[in-house]
Image (cartoon, rainbow, N blue to C red):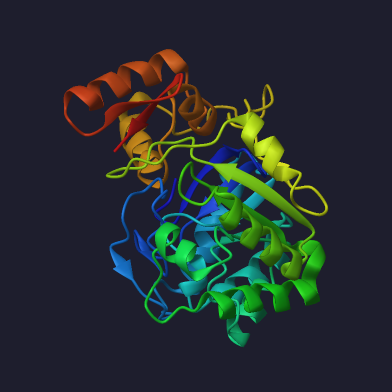
Length: 314
């Protein structure tokens, strides 16, 4: 696991995904109340060359060569990836070198910028967020940078989808009592209709949200809300699916002496259950259980219950 890559990890939406993180921790255009990594440290809309593009390409190529081979390479991580100035350059080179679909998970707030849209077009899949269709809900859920205007954000996503519709999978994240009122949902549905993506996916709070209390919707509620969209949206499964047997063999460096570091590195990107860690790291569950217990005792991670699941959190 390199400084800029993590996984591959089982994704509820994309299969076995090798993550790529090209911005500093919690550097984002939004400060979403449901973020599993906690509050945003640097709220900004300024694109920067955070890391040399050749370093990103090299780390991804090395991760692919180490295996296991992912289904997709996903640019997301611990901040907003479109803030990375060399995003398009990296995507174009990786497309030529690795032969694996490239996925961009973005909050979509900068797609109105021509240079960001050009960079995003280099990806095979683009998954922008739309958690609000009105300014009041946008401020309450996403807590945006002061320069961002929701109408311009929606228009930017819509213009991108008009040119690259087959690439666009729009994600709507719903939090109970926050953006699930009839009025808020009607505005989201109307905005999604303007965007006209290839598909709309409904997501909700499953993992812990450090420093904040956010409740998710039930599967029945998501199913009902999905029918409000035309065509109907697709609810994202509540639980992360288990990786296919044999899909995540233990990598060569899974020895116990480096496992604790890999556990902490993974949890910095997102909270996980013990089973999810076992699938992500390709390590025996019993060994991970001992490592996790030691990290908890040392105060480096903690356990947090979420429904019937117990997540490990940095």
